[in-house]
Amino acid sequence: MAAALTLLLIGCLLQGALCGQFEIIIPKTIEVLKGSCVTIPCSFDVKDQYNVNLDNTCKALWKESYWGPDVFDSSNPQQKGQLIGDLTKKDCTTTLNDMQPQNNKVYLFKLECDNSLKYNFDGVEISVKDDPPRPTLTPPTLKVKEGTSVSLNCSAPAPCLSLPPNLTWSPGLGEGQETLQENQDKTKVKISVLNFNASHLHHRQEISCTAVYRKQDGSTESSVNTSLTADITYSPKGTTVQGDTNGTLTCSTNANPAVKNYTWYRADGGQETFMGTGRVLTVKASDVSGPFFCKAENELGSGRSNNKHIDIQRLEDNCGPYGGVLFWAVTGVSLTVNIILTLYMVFLWKQRESMKPKEEDSTYMNLDHTNRSPDYDVIAKRHT
Image 1: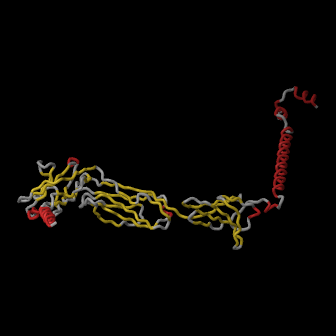
Image 2 (image 1 turned 180 degrees about the vertical axis):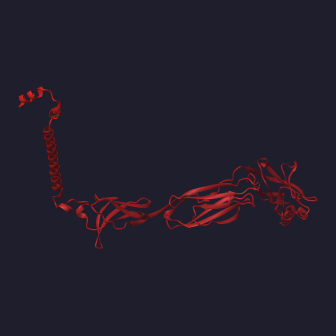
């Protein structure tokens, strides 16, 4: 038993002497917008015996291959980048500037100190894109009851910490609360939270979150958006009644889900008289003794219209119970009299035309007697 404990202690001591390994914590892939920068979150560890070698002489190198040229050297101030982390604290976070398509590569990290500590670690794949990824909406759909408190989250990657995206909401439902958060792999994401109370006015509205990315190279900023269509359920709103002079009443309303029941009433001195159901009601002239209104109902509630007065055109109001017959009788007599008068006028015109002297007789009577021939008197006598 004692021998077993001795071996166990020796094993633990040996394990303790060898604890700590060369390892790196870094994302596998980072998407970068062309013309912008990328901040590579990076941390590492070394074997315990090398901890004393982590000093101010250490530098961070990023290389395309272990034996290739340096892409970035933290000891060179003219490099297009900056070491953000502190190597003595095992933080190798680095920003590389002005990423272009030719920078679409795997970058390996090398720790190099002016002592025995030099080590090549694994790296990260940088994927340079022409356009940024679309923001993510959470939840991706919105279906709630009117009056519900809604919270929408919009998140967009922030690969360049010095130029994080600007997030905006439309329509103007309120101002989003923005924060910069960290993912599990240490990459950053910009989040905007929009809070509002759902209203029937939001139903079928397209709610959109837009991410605007600025660039280091001065080229046009990139804008991408993601949207959802709000589905708000609510009781009937804005119930109204339309009527015509024929006694047809129509009930209209705005509701989601759709109205199940329409009920009609007549208001008589504070009393409500049931008149029927259905969206359309036809009222007889004899029923018009007060204003009408309708109630529209769905599973969430009901809506009531204002009182509607109607004026039905009725001939009997002016002519008694036989107004319709009398109207057609009077119309027939009037038409007959007009026809007779027209025929009589035509007859008189014909008579007048027939009594006018003919054109040849008029010429004969108007002859110039001073130039008549000698035979004129003879001819005249014969006619007399």
